[in-house]
Length: 153
Ligand SMILES: CC(C)(COP(=O)(O)OP(=O)(O)OC[C@H]1O[C@@H](n2cnc3c(N)ncnc32)[C@H](O)[C@@H]1OP(=O)(O)O)[C@@H](O)C(=O)NCCC(=O)NCCS
Image (cartoon, rainbow, N blue to C red; front, side):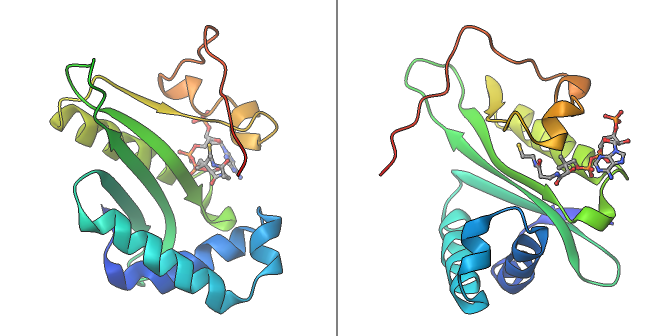
């Protein structure tokens, strides 16, 4: 399995990967074309400038079995950007083989190369990855001094 930067042509593959996860009710309720169209548009936005990185895990057979998205946030008061990992998914039948770790390692390497100050992400507390301590096992720490705030629109 190769880890590489996503390309525009990966949209269809990423869209079916996402739908196949069966993690999001919203995706189940919309037609496949709607998902594919959105993934294509959002992926293009990510590829358009250097503020975003999308890395994919590609099998030799050519299919994509996972991806990670990072958004590089230029805080005015930090010496370097902060990378926010918004999505990290591995197809269910390919989990537990080190691919999630490899994608995350690649993000850390890129973050260092960009002179980042730190990386962050939001982990859903009842997900298996959180319960298995996937992130702490890889050097991430849970912040006790901050609350994750949301404003629904
Ligand atoms: C979290 C996730 C990205 C990890 O990817 P992965 O390729 O399974 O990760 P790895 O194989 O590198 O490591 C998984 C760990 O769980 C263990 N594991 C074993 N079987 C597993 C399985 N079936 N599923 C998940 N993890 C498994 C691995 O041995 C490893 O343990 P370790 O921490 O002691 O090394 C992946 O499980 C996933 O997509 N989960 C659903 C979506 C999700 O929760 N994403 C995170 C968003 S915050």
